[in-house]
Amino acid sequence: MTNNRPWESEFIGRQPELAVLTTALDDAISGRGRLVMLAGEPGIGKTRLAQELASYAKTSGAQGLWGWCYEGEGAPSYWPWGDSLRTYIQSTEPDLLKTQLGNGAATIGEMVPEVLEILDGIQPAPTMEADQARFRLFDAITGFLKRASEDSPVLLVLDDLQWTDRPSLLLLEFLARQLDGSRILLIGTYRDTEAPPESPLGESLARLARLASYQCLPIMGLLPEDVGSFVEVETGITPPNQLLSAIHSHTEGNPFSLVR
Image (tube, rainbow, N blue to C red):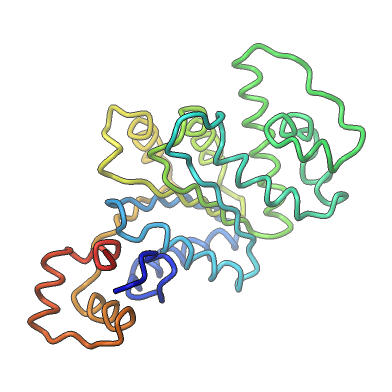
């Protein structure tokens, strides 16, 4: 097995999980915003599943935004949010972008400086106390995404949330509380082995679980028959049942373990 990037492999299995996600996207397209968390161990296929959903979203007329959480030190606050918004901001026609940003242009420009480069005449946001400035930022981003979703449904993926900062989690909670009536599907992925209840992510998940729009989707190992298909795609060889059983038992259906 030579492919050491399972997310580049042919998509195999996960049909029940994908059905849940496509239903959530259809709900969002219909104006019933949703939040779905994909939880599972490292390498289990959370990111790959989200990428498959993004492909479906594109064919459904939704725009996909993707924010990656950074594992190392030094990432600024709100990194996954800035990462995801930057791509959209740079690819949107300036007049439409100005309308969608509304009064929040200067505030969002502090997070994504490209806003100030694309739009002329944006005055700096007035100075506020830290708590007020944070609320202003949260409100500006939420309003921006909701207005953008009126023009085209939004799929926003925040990947590897176990590594993100507390402010990013608070923004996630803020937006999640205002998904009703929007055309936004918010997807988060995280390693459940790295999100104990006392961690910042664990605390956020406990609060999010009380929302009607929230759903947690555990991602487990591939089924034995899917492991067989995976091995056949990767090697061109159909494994005999005894070998397939041993592979499944050893890897517990984890796709990353299958390609190591």
